[in-house]
Amino acid sequence: MPPTTTSPAAATPGAPTDLVRAVRALARASRIVERASDDLSFADYRVLATIDGGEERASRLSQRLEIGKPAISATVDSLHRRGLIRRDAVVGDARASSLALTDDGREVFERMEGRMARQLELLADRADAPEALIAALASLGDAVDLAVEERRTKENA
Image (cartoon, rainbow, N blue to C red):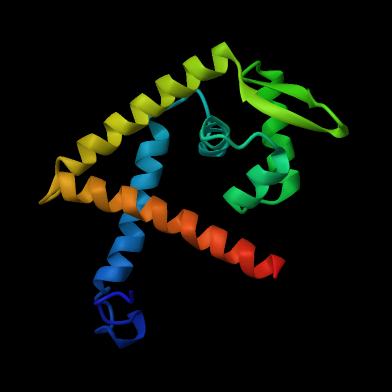
């Protein structure tokens, strides 16, 4: 469904549209939420969250997060060296490994996610409709997943 706001090109010069304001707010809010944890970077968080969500292979992490394989490999290597994830051999595929959070990784991830969620909650509490804002952001996550899956399907067709 297309946005109901006018396009940035149609806006009054110097006055951003609601859509542009939303993009700017999302960018600023993501930085505030990211700063809530000094344990891990946002890239680390995205990888841990994706592994926690069931993705076990680095190649699938790369596809799901739409991040290049070298960047995923570097993040996975860093998380592994820090003892936050483990790599298990995949039976029948000597080149592949299955990724999972370690106990320490789960503890760091859950602490970080809790702090980030609290920061988002504090921001949302300042909005006109905090619950609606949180629901909209959750829905945005679903839309992102759908867009990634559609792009992957189109590329594989």
